[in-house]
Amino acid sequence: MKKILFVTSEAVPFIKTGGLADVTGSLARYIDRQNYDVRVILPKYACMDEMWKNKLRFHSHFYVSLGWRNQYVGILETVEAGVHYYFIDNEYYFAGPQPYNQLHEDIEKFAYFSKAALAAIGMIDFVPDVIHCHDWQTALVPVFLKAFSEDYPLLHHTKTVMTIHNLRFQGRYTMDVVKNLTGLSDDYFTPDKLESYGEANFLKGGIAFADIVTTVSPTYALEIMTREGGESLDGLLYARRNSLYGIINGLDSAEYDPNHDIYLTQNFGISNMREGKAANKLALQRELHLPEDEDTIMLAMVSRLTDQKGLDLIAYVMDEMLSHARLQFVVLGTGQEQYANMLRYFADKYPDKLSANICYSEQLAHRIYASADALLMPSLFEPCGLSQLMSYCYGTLPIVRETGGLKDTVQPYNEYEHTGTGFSFANYNAHEMLNTIYYAMHIYYDDRAQWDEMAQRDMRMDFSWKKSAREYEKLYERLLEN
Ligand code: GLC
Image (cartoon, rainbow, N blue to C red):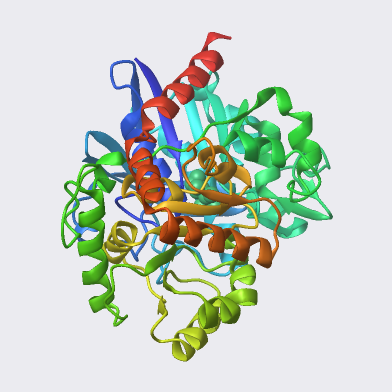
């Protein structure tokens, strides 16, 4: 039995701010249990739901050195859906109303977490063959493992994987502060290691020191080796190209099954897709105070409200779109205030056409996926994207920009061959997006049979973890062979 330890700053069902949590939480469950014992270690945040906090049992405690400091580490544990989870407890670091706060706090918090997670391994009677790290918050793990190897005698044969879910976030901070905090010696802060543009860069360290680097789609893996997509780390990523893999994310398909989804007004399957979606649409229109009309196309967006997600394109053409076209647009998400305000403004101006829900709601998200006809994802960049995969499950056609994982998972409709799974455009240009939306509307209103056929095709696709989990297993095998 091979032992794998995920180190992550979030995982469903315990704590989630984005797709990272969906992926770490569900992948851990889909790795083959006959051959692997996958466990997960994450922080115990004060902001976690009481229901989950109450399930955690105390395991042990100790102190860990962080630079010149000596900090308390509590280990809590629980088993959920057959997976063993460990939680690092420290009320000073993991307080606050959300997992992430100001950068200077997060830098120290996650340097601490990475150090504590490694040290905890000595206490839990689980010596991993592979430590699998996710994003910048855990990127110092491979660095510490190398730099302080004498502190981890159990881990001399342990390999590391660094998965990049979003290269935009790197954990960059003033070099002196990070030196002082981590106790890493000066030779770790050179341009081939942690140094980047005069600062210390956590993710850079992870990419430099991990045995294997992965990211969440093949196209994003290529894009991040280029100047445009490399977020200033393209040089190092290119240098590591022989150890860089793009593996598309999977979905926990049981959670997005319109046949059994408890949040829907009416459950449906492939055979009664059209009627099922119409019933849900009418109910959602009522809920959101939009005119009740099953024949008007409903576009949706379920997304963090950040510039990554293409909201600038939407802002640019929103007036044009809402003043002319026969459509309804439903948005759900939280994020940057400027985008929230933009959406509130237009919802005020076009109350019959736009419903802006500036909040986080899993239930509403499911009802939107089930009710909408199309899902808009005009991302500036997109490492993988999960919403388009969720929308497929409900027969909702994605309209996306051809970037990263969107390019890998959405095949554009071809009206001559009757193939495709959605609609797409190439350039980050608002009118290119708008024309693609208009083209999709034309198919919806003028060739509904084709539209419905495509929706049913989408519902039949399989983006469960079955395939992608096998690819991770292959990587683990490859690592452990040498
Ligand atoms: C990040 C990326 C998203 C990806 C997710 C999980 O949120 O922005 O594209 O799907 O991580 O890997």
